[in-house]
Image (cartoon, rainbow, N blue to C red; front, side):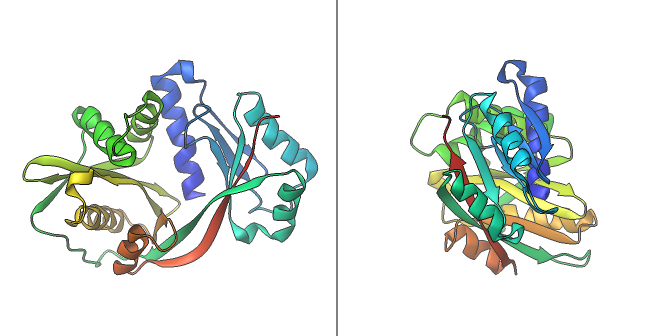
Length: 256
């Protein structure tokens, strides 16, 4: 639900900034369905099935939410929702497009987190919004042009209620950025990206350390991150004592 809340708040902020997007969020089937543009990575449902059995009517309502907005139905499904829900999606001809690991570590105010001294991490201010969105978006896009929809998403996250964003600098040059949001004592770590020319220098570790420090200072009990299985990002989280708590699956049903 920390991830679902993050997406919901991003959509709310994006709609205020860019009303033409038609961003929306709705509680359905125990989770939250989010729309922030047909090609937006935020457009998906999270938390579905975690509060009890999901019936046919709720699945129909979930699909209708996306269909009315011209988007495929995308679900990030937690295995704790149970096998019957997977079977229900299979009958509806959803296809698997991605798996990712959700990692968690406990926090306490006395935790100490170190990072390379040559990297400076600063909390991003409203004046940094343009630099932050461009840096993070380019880190994800790498060698391809950054699309306006990705910039809109990054901007939505930047202005999301309760979200704090951080910029990493190497020799005074912006090298990467990341965000964190607190939900019910859980600090959700997301949106971390490093520009290609600065990779392998500890930027991600420094951003993770800064956000963990911030979360502990703000009384969070847990910190959560999401990575691709076996990735360098997962190994980086594990160096900070994160552990995998479940592997989630992304299912999609195309528009008919």
